[in-house]
Image 1 (cartoon, rainbow, N blue to C red):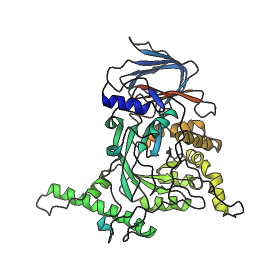
Image 2 (cartoon, rainbow, N blue to C red; image 1 turned 120 degrees about the vertical axis):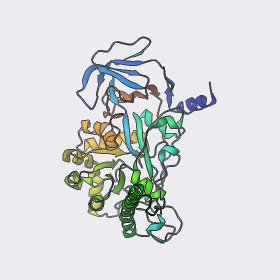
Image 3 (cartoon, rainbow, N blue to C red; image 1 turned 45 degrees about the vertical axis):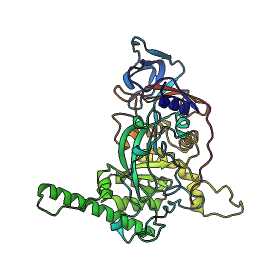
Image 4 (tube, rainbow, N blue to C red; image 1 turned 180 degrees about the vertical axis):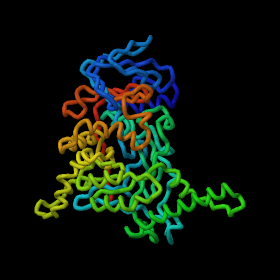
Length: 443
């Protein structure tokens, strides 16, 4: 056994035990006589799924077992597509502490200031702009949150760098592999942005400055792109200077913009409608007020599952604004409102204590009016569609990556337990969840 393999198995054993190896030629797995929920098609009350070499090769009511297959009797089990965390920092070393659109105890929950940076004179200095940073280059198999996420039924996540205005490029990852490079499903699916101000001094040091900078950056990116296209056609023209910041922004297929409160949603819909990128709004706690507007704008949404709550040390005699109380009461109804309006949405775990708490937060949205089928779609196929990876993940179909979540009972019932997951066709059995220390977030 190699040192690398021993290290991987030791890491995985802290909360999940792998029952297979990430290598070609592993035995097929046939799950039969189980309830199959493909998401993309009708439910099979008693069906089967065949997995070979990391892919789904057959789905149906009855499938013959290939020679040497591992047969799993699915009586009493339900098979779902592997759950996808639609916006996270899973696989990255440090828990986020800045630049996040998270709810705070009293108000809108805008992003915290960015870390100190070199003083900038203006947008030409590209302050707090690092789109060349890629989560795919930073992902590690040793993140202790990965086995906990698998134990809760998650098999994939979309993970992003989160510090700065243009923070960096996100990647879709599978939540297990022997080597980090094997975790990557899609290496660059978009850029994460915040409205963080420049704490190091200089531009932009106000919300107005950040918004102006966002607008100016896209104007500059369009000019840069046009200049390079003209130069490619006529090399006698002056050669444009290379800018890696603008290169990354141009290459990104979509951009995530923060919008927690209703006025922030309105602002971002107006601001981004002319941007040369596909906007995706994240946060959305007050989306219950703007379902129709988001649908009309045609933008996708990522709802943060850290529902607003009162500060733990709040004085019980403290009288709070009615809008703050209403936000806490109705934030969890946002997914149901978005589903009814026809908005494509998924969920984000950023700021939630544990993966198991993430599932409980989704249950709260179901209790607030979100149909369970829509909740499942948001955590599987809709997440895949938002990031353009629906041909690989998000449903149980022939040819897709064999990421499956197998439960005893329906996924969102309180008594349901995740029995095991498959990631790239490898089976993981969950162990009892450990509760990590709650991270401290800047306020």
